[in-house]
Amino acid sequence: MARREKKTKAPKEPGRMKQMYQVFQMTRRYDNLATWFFLLAFLLPILIALALAFLLSAGNVLGFVLYIVSGVMAGLLAFLIVLGRRAERAAYSQIAGQPGAVGAVLKSSLRRGWTASEMPIAVSPKTQDAVYRAVGKGGVALIGEGPRSRTQRMLEDERRKLVRFLPNVPVHFIYVGPDAESVALHKLAPTLGRLKKVLRKPEILAISNRLTSLDKNGLPIPKGIDPMKARAQRSQRA
Image 1 (cartoon, rainbow, N blue to C red):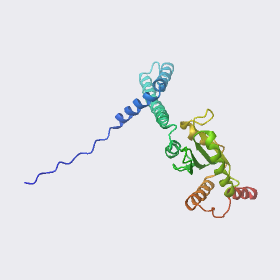
Image 2: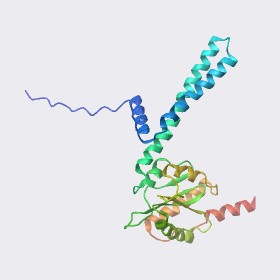
Image 3: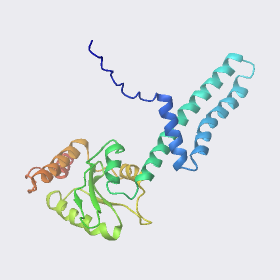
Image 4: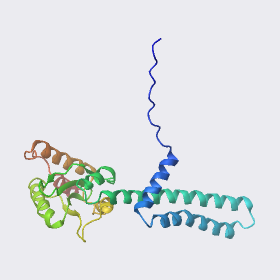
């Protein structure tokens, strides 16, 4: 009789509750204040619900219970929201200062209205400092990864290239590094989101396509209608 080969079972993935517990433990390990934020997020809605229950449903048992249940549900929701944000912050604190950290943020946390690649558009072979580019409602953002004293010139070089082909599109500099005035890694996405809106979705797509064409070919971007000028002409006709 032929021997039956025993099939090796793939390791079972942890359940959702276990995953949440692991995230909770990881966040507490790297964020000393996380526990207090979690307690506040969970207990505050419950305390508010209790106060409303005593004020509005003191003689109504069903109403009192509904307030308490609503408070607990709201507390759980607030806890999950805070857990997600603090966990993200703790995760980014582990990779802060490492090459490619900005790319990881652009890949996973970029907010709606912005598009970017996790790959840098320029890298210093000596220092591993890098420049990333994001296109969105605020225009074009050039993000320097490394000390400002070293990345500022790299950003200026990239801006000169952009101005040649997109002269009417605003270009912003953002520095992510060890300097005091630099943007913290976990604040990069919110910083992009706070830039003043100057572009609409079709214009963002047109600019992104032009820059992608330049990156792939290494050649001047094909001539065409400047999206900023096109919008100005439409507004003058209106």
